Length: 317
Length: 239
Image (cartoon, rainbow over all chains, first blue to last red; front, side):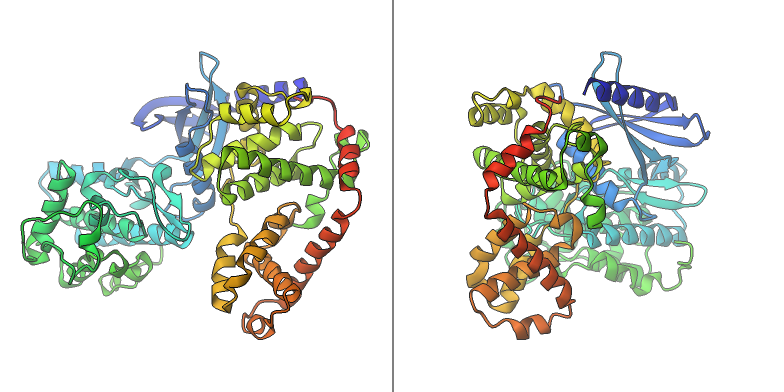
């Protein structure tokens, strides 16, 4: 067995020598991300370095989940491509994992900010193309039984030249098991969090992603997040103020949710007042993504067929 | 996967005299071991099934001499528990292994052995960790057929299929159907009409059923002794 261990170590060390780190481009939840060059080919990649737990528990479950889901999903053009996984050792001799991803030069958060900073809006056809790609990627994930659970502009990578959008950061995602229940709480970034999650639902479904997609849609048009609460309650109030306070008529079962309380009563306002830059079809699609009852919310697949996308050239998407 | 790619005894193992029969027996014994260990640490059947699938996948690529099954088995359970979001501490596994085999030095492993093996298994599996099982479709099929009374019996047959390599070869829903087929025939339930409406290749379902029944037959004679002989061919401690 000794020989195998030796072989194994040499193999992984040389694997890490295969890349030249160029710069640190980000610091994720569980490690640093580098832009790096593959020495053999000159190809630029993103290296996501994952430290293993200090507490003797090996590879973190979130990493395992991300890697295994990416192994299944990263064939799709709208899911970030995991090229390889390499084991290596850091300076202290601890094992580290490197996830080798294709390199994407920006993300949707930065992209939106670049327009906001100069006081411009993203061209409507660009919004449409990005939204279509987002729906397509989400449809692929959902089709494979995977709910992302943390869709937000920061997790949507982009290539500025080709205007390609790809879904990344599947660390919180999980494969659906039926019956769909009891997923970990406290997962989504507040602004994109679906009302049922805020109200403490125990039944997560694909709808939580579609709500996030809706929020991202509005943000692409407005250059501003649609609902920006800084606490769960405030987040709910932001939502209620625009869409009306939900009740048993519009959302059967809402008052039975764990964290439901009595709230100020708002009646629904016109979506067009909140997203003035969006045309009629766009508003219709957005309203279907922001339906209160999760099972009634439009699916990613259905969204792709919505008239809003009719005039989009989809041949290269 | 093709059965021909699964039933391959690696050269190093062949040198030690391990036959295909031995290979299958050892994998079966290790499946049982994973199940028993899992009962101690209390994880769901789904985790057990995933762990056994990992173990079986590992041995399509690595030999028994190279990867000690006595360490691979608990490590697969450790990994499966993480992948299925019900993490079990390595410390706990080490504790129960010791409890199950207090005297046997061949089963003496420390936390660091499991963590090292975890990395090797991940490489061997090429990080493909998502596994689909027959349990989900089993429930749906039985509901659809109105045969929920067969649930417990069929569930047990599905569990038994993990003593073989079926999960590597056939789609999970066909395995589920084969188990339902066996259950309905042995309980003399009339399920022919229901099966006919399914639009699945009944020949495949029947072939899988035959494999399972052959396996049950084969298990009857001197299984303990045959397992012991198979294990005696393994190196004492290969990690």
